[in-house]
Length: 401
Image (cartoon, rainbow, N blue to C red; front, side, top):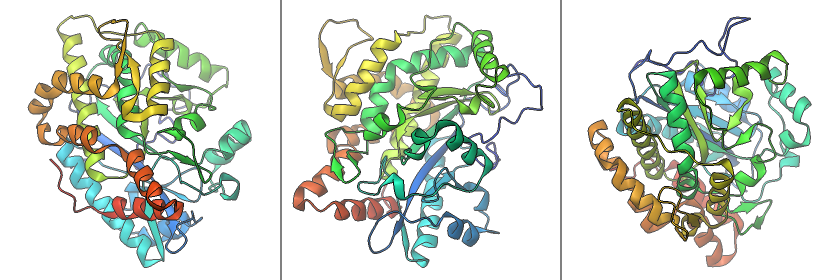
C-alpha cells in the first residue's frame, strides 16, 4: 500500500512552508474514505506491570526494520505510538494493526517488557513519568505546565479521507452528534491512580483540562474554519493547527477528518469494528452533503452533555435523543443500534460489513472498561487488570468479522 501518513499521522509539525495558509489542503488528493489509524500503547514492566520509561530502548530496537517509520515516541517515555499506512477498508486496517501489534509486542517481550492498550494505566502515577526529549514536547510542557505533565492518557485516532474541504466541514458538524456513541464504544479507562473512578472513561476527564479540546465548534464553511485557525496561528497562540486537540478535527495537510475522541481500545477486533463504524459514518454524511440534503448539527452544550453521560456510564449511558428531538432520554446502546442500521449499507459498499458487525459484539459483550472492571471485581487485584490488558492487546489472532 502507498504511504499517505508520513512518518506519523499525528501531524507533528504542520507541514506548511513558512507563511503558508491553513486554506492550503490535500482534500481530494487521495481516494475518498481511505483510512489511517494510530494507537498509543503503554510500555509495561514484564513483572510488575507498572509503566517503564523505555521508549528509547524500543526505538533503538526497531531501527532499520521495515516498520520503523510506523513506530514513534509520544509525550512521555512510557508511551509507544503506532500508525498504519493508508488503508482502503477496515479489513486492511486489521491486517496492518495485527502486524504492528504483533511486532511491538515481540520487541517488548524480548526486553522484559509488555505493551498494553487502554485509555489510562490503572495504577501508575504521572509524577513518575519522564518527558520525551524532543523540542515539541518540551515546549508543550513549558506552555501547559501541570496540565501537560498530568497527561498520562492513551488514545486511538481514526483518519478518514474526504474529497472536498466544504464537505469535510459539514461532515464534522454532523459527526459531533455521534460523540457519545464513540465514547461509549471505546471507553477503556475506569481506573486512575490506583482507584476505580466510577467512570467508564477517566481519560476524557483528564484531557478536558487541555486548551482547545472537547467537541469542536460548528463552522459555517472552510473559510470560517481557516479564519479561526489562522487567527490562533498569527497571534502565536498555537504553532500550527495540530495544537488544536478537538475530539474531531480536520487535518488539512492529510486531507482527512481525524476522529480523536476514542480511548485506546484493548481488543483488536473492537478497534476494527469502531474503525468501520467511523468510516461508514463519514461516507453516510458525505453522501448526504453530495445529495444537497441537510446535514444535522447540534448545540455544543447538548453534545457535551451526552459525551459526559457516555464517559460516566459507558454503554449504559442515558443520553438525549438528539436526532429525533424526543423529550425523554434513552440508552446509548439503543442509539448506537439505530446508527448501525443507518450506516450498514455504506459499510457494505465499502467492503467492511463484516467488520462493522463487531459493534453489535461490543454492545453484547461490553467495552474495554467493562472487561477491566470484571477482572478487578473478581479479586480486587489491580495488577491483574493490567496483566489482562497486556494479554488482550498482544492477542492478534482473534477472528475479525
